Image 1: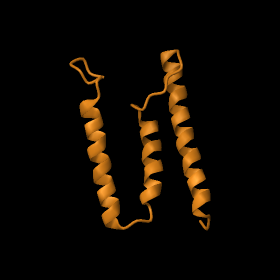
Image 2: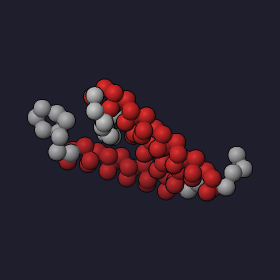
Image 3: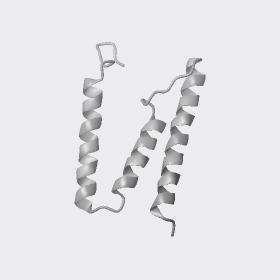
Length: 89
């Protein structure tokens, strides 16, 4: 509250990076080797949080369009992801 948009952006960026790093740590511990994946929930929250910053003070129309675009792109990414073969990702 009362912070400049630059300071808020740095906060959002840091929090997003921390979430991705925590997810990478958990994934690396589980797999036994260093891994960075975006298929679990923490990196997806980080990406969503980061993108939400850019539409936060926009009109409802712009926010709705952005939400629809993200959902469409997210769905297309999963449909065309090469790991989605018969055996699954």
